[in-house]
Length: 239
Image (cartoon, rainbow, N blue to C red; front, side, top):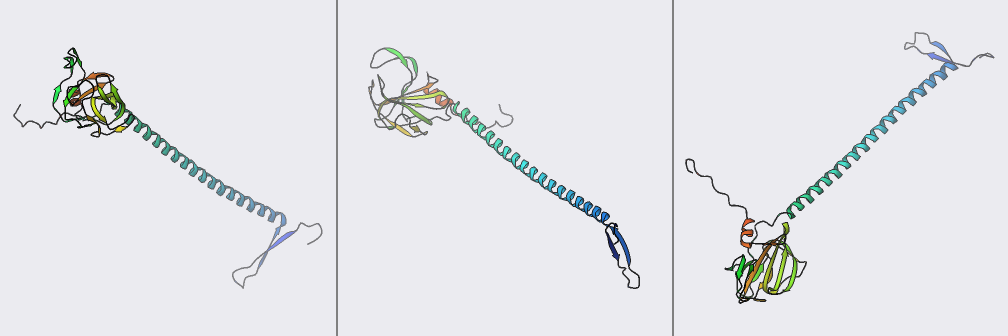
């Protein structure tokens, strides 16, 4: 290379056949540099594109995972609200299929005016009297919570239960109580025994039903909690 000349590269091209002569191609250093810079630029763009695509895929995966978590949380919230709504609706309804607290003959029915056998006056009889031997177990007509256990004037030893739908039941003249205030009782569970405490001429159970604080006929109310029986369709041609 002569003084003052730009450095150059010589590219030797070897033909596939030995009979052919080789060729020499001169490449200036500037051309080589430009080619190298072009290759670097292409590789940089390719790497940037791959990196961008990788970051984009990762962002999409993170976004999808976040949306899935949000959907699961929304589903759990809806299920919780639905469960709470159903529970609240169930609490607003009276107990279904209520049963009698004892098996006994009805000796005195619900009445707005009845002649009291001991006081010898007419006054309301806000429940029904069910005859049963002393010590007979009194069972809960429906699931409920014990709200009161104690002595009341005229009623003797009395137990009160609270049920769903604003329904309460009261049991008077008991001989003994098997529960305490705050206890939970299931339908059919024994919670007291029949006695003759208070103003009573013989062992029996005085049974009351109150709906939102108002006394109602226990026999009619218990009957109303049962679904009407399904009747078979009449055969064709009959009325």
